Image (tube, rainbow, N blue to C red; front, top):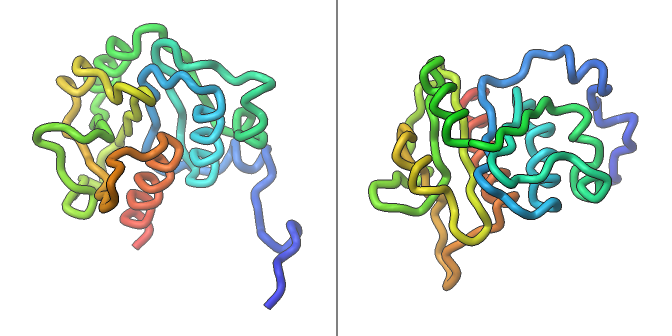
Length: 175
């Protein structure tokens, strides 16, 4: 077995990525403070052909430091910054998007039991590294999805949560 060369991986060019149809989902970051976490989410969003990322509240915009983890994905994935993430999500909800908070909370559904409407456009909200998704955004969400965990720690890094959640959603779309 040998590793594949970059030329053998059939990756899209930046220009082709911008033109190709994306999967029908977006990501909203609710007060995610770490530049490196935001960069990692950009990279994951690129991997799963995300339509757009919304940077809510104090979530940092792309920067030189973010390039360390984003590896160019801040150029390929569309993004917008919104000082008031709640107000922006309310607006998107009125446009017909379903909003799913990725959070451990009362009434959350375990990821394996979640059954999304695959014909509906989705927004996945990932929250602050310490306090999670805000109560205000949870209140307007169509639901909360919890990623099962079995160890002593019951929290995952936001970029890990994004990777798990997005892969599960894409797997459902393409199967």
